[in-house]
Image 1 (spheres, helix red, strand yellow):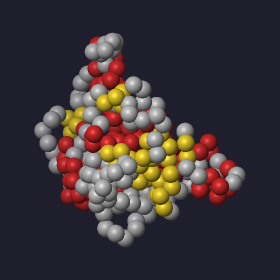
Image 2 (cartoon, rainbow, N blue to C red; image 1 turned 90 degrees about the horizontal axis):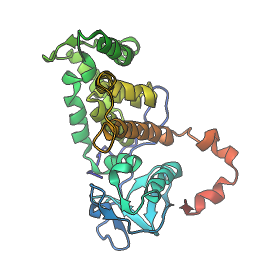
Image 3 (tube, rainbow, N blue to C red; image 1 turned 90 degrees about the vertical axis):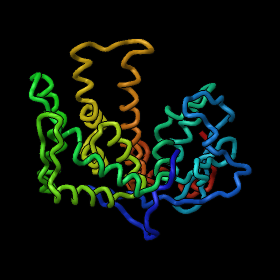
Length: 304
């Protein structure tokens, strides 16, 4: 729910770790919002009362689907129609809207958040944000005590750094303490290329994961399909999980619940989004030619 990841007009197909993904987002600017739902009117704190009965999806164009509330298309804060590359992603977002209760809670719609980020956030701003993490990447700052935390950091962080060292030949420096030690120029150039080679949806997922874990390399590894949700979550939350294990988890409305579950929710949504934009993805493990009458299905408006 932010502003547009701009990229050159030429289509780009990501080829990260052998994955085949849909290209950049399709943007349809709406100068008149009549008959549409503008998400900018929804309060981020979850205090907006639900104003619709049902969510559905519809095909806009080839590789372009939208989400509708009571038959009215969703429009982002920057007045772009919410467009995603396939019916599966659109259905997942529509499901988030359909599952809202008496109040609409944007923070409980992580798939919607990824899509809106890809559409509305300036691409150059996201790239700059991710590049700013490089010399302060949390995975590179270690402790030398207590031993339990040393082991935890090594267990969850080393596999991520080893991926860049072993598979891409990068020199990744780690250090003990908080004094900044810049990464080699060649390493930063290579990481920057990984970022710039992402399509808009991948970049939105990368931003989400990197912000949770304060780590650009963690975000890249997730987009490269090198980490499961569990492994990415454990890496992003290693220090906090150690503190909770040592001192105990605080229960109740003012406890650790949101602090633990919010990152898990958004990392899981990011990984799921990547799977759904993969051209080879099929719900329940079925490919399009195994589902049945796909031509008939594609022509109808989907309702949950």
